[in-house]
Length: 413
Image 1 (tube, rainbow, N blue to C red):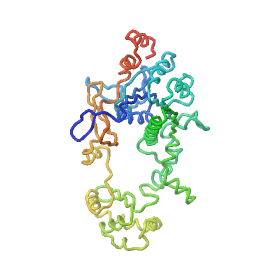
Image 2: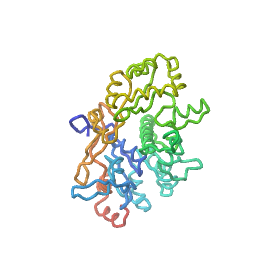
Image 3: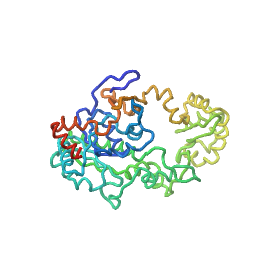
Image 4: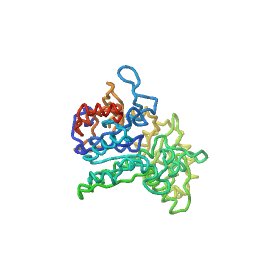
């Protein structure tokens, strides 16, 4: 559905011509395929019969249906699987493997996150499937990638936040290494994965050829070390935890004030001078020790204390108004409830309500991508387990009702 401030009129998505076969579970892979579904792709999510995606059970909280009973859908599952169709298939069964091959035959994209080598045992690896569909974009999402000494090992987001260095630079200087409050490695891997898939589709548009994409959670979290890694490469100094301070920019941190704390994010010399004037510290703007970003960084130990003292003079929301009026980047620190009460967030329609098979409206958080001609589509919430098995096997594969019943009786679907 097209999203605007007041309506949800149907529109054709940018990827509505594409068929995506989603063999992923948990978060990184489902996050990527949800983005493709938001863009209009027909995403068929393959799940294990009876059990489904692991995250269906990662609650509470669970969605409560119209009858007042909990569904099998946790908040975790709902967050990453909207807009998809659920089909249950036992990949360990030869007949199940045959169904996946038949679905892959006319799919544009297949995304999987099984351990390295698992799908090859079933004849569902890239080399096998490209024989029947040379145009297939086949994307593998794993913890460590398809090669290297750690390739066979499993791993979750938390592990990679540690191994990728993120936790070593997150937290208070005298505290323990701290993970992010969300599964950031999974989520950013999902974003990189959808980007890679779109690039591979564009290459296919030119060449007519599919290809294999190898995505690793460790690679992705190492990549976002970005300027911290370059800081190390240039200086030889290992970056340390700095709490809410910034390694390169000053003042760029949280300051306590009355009735809360405020984030001040000064990014250039003009903003610094405006900030000093706004807080009544013109002498700091005139001091040569703080005249440039590099000087402020070198002399942060003497600059921050007088700023911190000045910030105690007003309440948080008053400071936000004052600093915004002065053109200084700043903001309050919200909890999640406050985020979705903020007038800007409400104006942008970031909270959604989507229909669910249980008959109750289901909350969701909107995709941040805005496109004028092909807006994101939000047609339904994450599906019930196996909700679309009959439809897909009948319409995509042409199976009869009796054949579908036979497969169900065998536990294949």
